[in-house]
Length: 190
Image 1 (cartoon, helix red, strand yellow):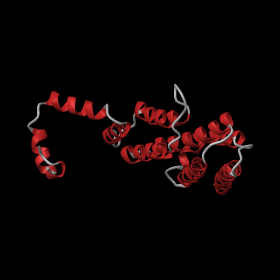
Image 2 (tube, helix red, strand yellow; image 1 turned 120 degrees about the horizontal axis):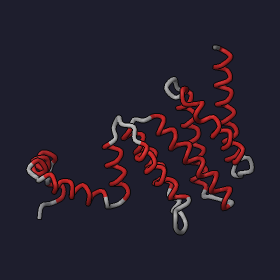
Image 3 (cartoon, one colour; image 1 turned 90 degrees about the vertical axis):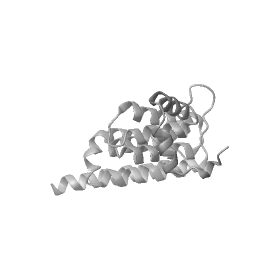
Image 4 (cartoon, helix red, strand yellow; image 1 turned 180 degrees about the vertical axis):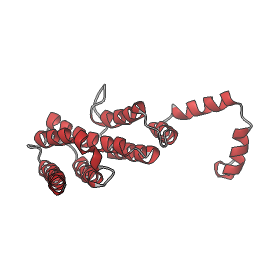
């Protein structure tokens, strides 16, 4: 048996080049059917520079499933949700899709708290941090063009988080107000 770390990329590449196409497809299928991390790696690497709604939706399902799975209770694993956003962002380079996932995550945190009355503090912290990063991206020259498509959702997020404790509702109100001021100031300059 070959030691796992004894095969370098050069050797593996030769083996793969000599492998039948159908065998490679089977190998990738087997890899894909393993833990979600493998699937996310394949999806994010495959879509470099491509816009694909079904790929974005698959990453949204990963996030949604942590909060509201079809059966049972969600896992509420912040490492899974943040990794989904990071994998999509790094794999696709799709700014709009990345921002969509970021806001989608924050919306799910708020929905979960409103539905069940509480959540682990790390999700509150991660929700605040995700919204902060989202707002930073929205202020960039590349991100500013997406404000009209996110504006209504940001306002709704502020309304729905109004009674959320932990200071989370206050943080959301602050970030949304800051974004409104930023774009209002930008309008006055033009």
